[in-house]
Figure 1 (tube, rainbow, N blue to C red):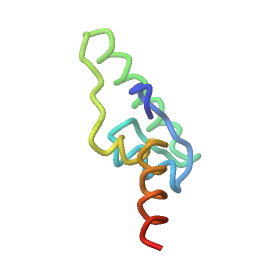
Figure 2: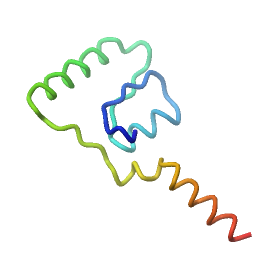
Figure 3: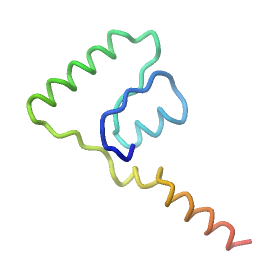
Length: 79
């Protein structure tokens, strides 16, 4: 996520949710071969056209180690 490059995720779960929340790419099921191909084709066209890929950096912070470490420290200090 931190690389801010497009991510293609095969399957669903926590990784898929993080990718979606951060607008960091797309998740697909194994059976969606045509959709993966279309996504890659669109991504290549946008890259060749010079269109920047923009992620949701505000949500990206919520998945960082520093953020999670801060949450642990905050919760421990409440005990």
